[in-house]
Image (cartoon, rainbow, N blue to C red; front, side, top):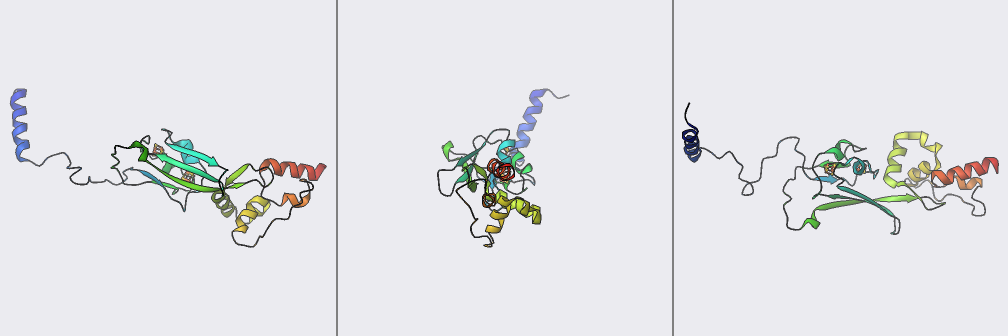
Length: 203
Ligand code: SF4
Ligand code: SF4
């Protein structure tokens, strides 16, 4: 067996004439292999704002914040790339499967960490009775779509989804008593619906 020093010298001479085993990045872009998990990005069209991605993120890299003071009220998602570990769990567990996707982007080097984020906003639907958050509008539409005609069992689902078709103008309401029948055909939260139904049945 050759002594270690001779072997290392041989390796050094060989490497002088052979191609480098390292990549030439940043002089040349690195080669991206299939299935590479790079910077995750939201898709405005297919994200419904449910928040599952923020819940499963092991690094807590996704902030989810509801803002009901702006008009319209919104749920804002922000992915912080300086915290993200590029595990892909957000994409894997996304309710719609394509609301957030890991791109092939990998070069995030910067001297300004505060620039390492991207965000998306989804419009919220508020209860017409108490003002509580019901859900993002796109989430309600997605649920109504999957339920088909069964959505008519829930006035909130029916009003929000058919409102987009322009076949529901404005719900009839009677402010004199929240328990009156017209008030149940409104976009209201589960708590207000329960009060309305219980009031309707038992006064
Ligand atoms: S639809 Fe997907 S990306 Fe959008 S909030 Fe839900 S889990 Fe996250
Ligand atoms: S890739 Fe992983 S760490 Fe990054 S935002 Fe998605 S779930 Fe969080």
